[in-house]
Length: 493
Image (cartoon, rainbow, N blue to C red):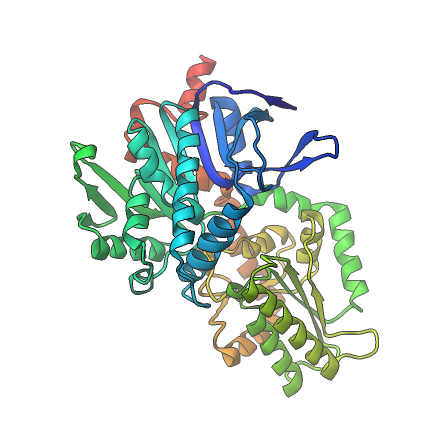
């Protein structure tokens, strides 16, 4: 049900680059929406429906001016972006400057003043949209690297708001962040928040070191003090780790359906019933370490560490940023590696690597996870990596082994995985072999420990823990969060 409306001011506002819906415009100009699946909206939707909530974001289509509307009880506030802004704000500054910089400069960031100018303009537009829909004293939660200037812009326009920010990707070491010509402006933008959340404690520490080095604000422990005139008598911002998760119980149920389990068996049959099925699932991105894992697998075949027909690698690489030169080159390199290894080792009708360059629905991914004996998550740098947690959530049979890069945020929590340094190809080969040959009891013991962590710390737990910390930090203990236990009880009385 989609109703166009201005709507009342909202007690809880989420500001993200994208709305949690996909837009389509028919030939006659009729606009329709489909809810886009995502952990964030899954976690926040119940709270937004019960306590009054708005979501501010871009529709995903260029040059589309849309009125606010309501979808499933959530007030949607579309923010328009022109084709030029998508190119310079999104593909440019967000994904060719910040993304590589924040991922340890795996490829060189590009620094263009025009991109920065458009980034600032778009952030101003998002901040203005959020300020317009937020009720007095509302909680506003800003998401991710595309919108790092929004907290300070909001603070300036609406000092009554309680503002949280969460960075879904890593925050780089101070020595790398210092490259950014606009480092001071980005830090000041983030410091408009009451609470800044990161995936790992190391990311929070990197941020605090950068604040200490590149601003004049005092840093003490996890706190930054702001004593500028407009913040009289002063504010304290906390930076901390709040590792994100998924709706693990729902994914567990999906993977447990009889049709999912039967599809998993069918996948293995289609692959020729290999002794060991290795699986990689990634966006086709240079941060994911896809080339490193394929290289390791190819060497294991060439050296005879893996016998003929013993193992098959399925690599799902969903398309990503296909207009960007680095991604075009990555796709070409990966496809060349796969072709070469299959040329050397495959038999007729039996490739050793199945490379799938497209996306799959959750049902098919759950079946793939149930089918896989070993999942390889070998990111060179990753904020979290929810694929690792999806695999664990899917394995209610307590089987399967997770090989996990120590440079993925998930490594901090999933300590029962076999952890690897993806740059160490020899070490990775040894670990993959250990995973392939691990005794059943050891597999079950490790998976049981992993599942305990993933099923307990789900995405709702993540949202609750962040918003509770924001309530304390922003002085919200006098006014309960929308949809929180106290608030719900008060309405029920």
